Image 1 (spheres, rainbow, N blue to C red):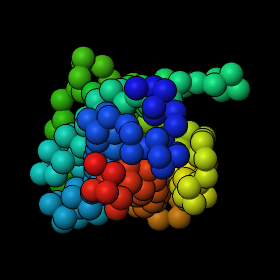
Image 2: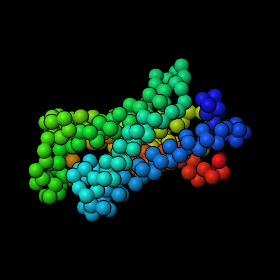
Image 3: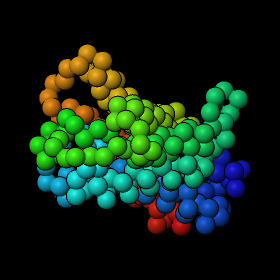
Image 4: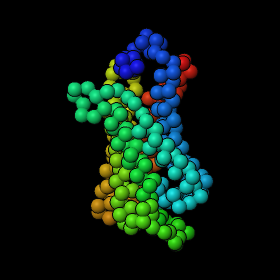
Length: 231
């Protein structure tokens, strides 16, 4: 199956691939991408209030979407299998997505502190210690580290991995998606270090932009519009 997948960019070989293997691979990409596009929309629509970050929806009535979608990211990315690493590459597709998936799961297991959510209701909640009984400060560090690893990994997939093989007219989109994600991460990192932001909702805004860029990249790579003709 790896031999066939390594030739996926040639139309004739694509038609000879096992329908089950091709269908499963594309559906996984499509699912990851669609969930990325839906996450910011669903958490806002069902809570009907903008919060400081997407992570703060963990403490709202939209938490089911936040928890389920981020968990799905984690498990889907860990189970994702792509091309093996070439001699010029440090990490394979599988390694990058596994690292990203683990970051997503840490993001869920160690929720962000509910303070600073820009919601009086959430900020006043009497929240018990997070998982494993550790302090909120430690949980926050693990949470942001997991989020950073997750987003950085999917940016690497878009920029470095999705652009391998024969050009199909979409490589520029993958590179732009990766760059947008990295810019969003850099802006948030700088704001965190200097302790200043443009608005109270910068984290939510840049997280949403990054997640949309990630979602579009994976949806396109999943050949959503071409899916029915492939199978």
